[in-house]
Image (cartoon, rainbow, N blue to C red; front, side):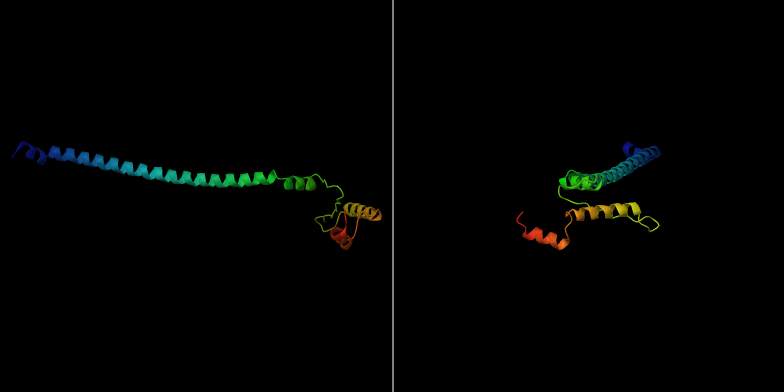
Length: 137
């Protein structure tokens, strides 16, 4: 037998090739696991990006709404109690938790409506519609 043939059949060569094979398998498993871990991270980050883009779109639409004239007018009416010229506000009293109305609000609202109607500033609904469609103003 030749020297190469004897070397391949020796225990030392078998141990050396076994260690080499185990190291190669270990490296392959490690690379596959790192690839799987990287793909998992990429999937998670892609999901976060998509969620961030959706949230950005929602915030941009909210910003557009908040910057609109309609929203500013609505906030001025509701929170600041402002009104347009020749516009009348009607106060609808809230009921208290026990089901009773606050008499101060009711009396103030009734007094205000009564004083406006006596001045001729409150017009009934059919007359208002008639004036809207057929008035020359």
